[in-house]
View 1 (cartoon, rainbow, N blue to C red):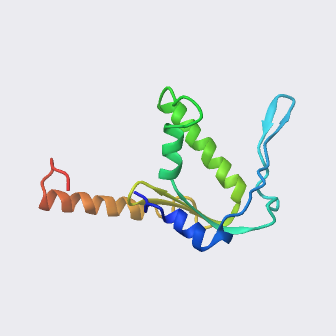
View 2 (view 1 turned 30 degrees about the vertical axis):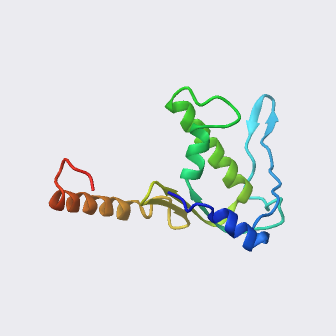
Amino acid sequence: MGVPALFRWLSKKYPKIISPVIEEQPTNVDGEDVPVDTTKANPNGEEFDNLYLDMNGIVHPCSHPEDRPPPANEEEMMLAIFEYTDRVVNMVRPRKLLLIAIGMSTTLEVSAKGPLANLPRSSSHALHRSRVREKYVGANQHL
């Protein structure tokens, strides 16, 4: 769940946080799409170390688009999410860290340490939460 009107407040208080983006497009060679080479310098003239993505801001517009009909099935929705995520990452091109927040308490950190570095810790936290829930609330009830 996001903070209502936070972006509006931030952008009014700090207008320089918003900048135009030059988006490189994949090229088509002999009928094959060649993806953007993200190892090259960012065409926006700015390099970014980190990118923090809240997947709620991506999943909702991909599952309920305003400019086209909604996806017909889960597979189409997932493809739209992956395409949009790739598009954002290609625009920003983070050099050190990509942090993806999924749901309320799960994050996936992709960095030089390895893409699944935080996953065992997240799993152990989820196991702990489920044990606490069973102890205090009961196995069939939700907090």
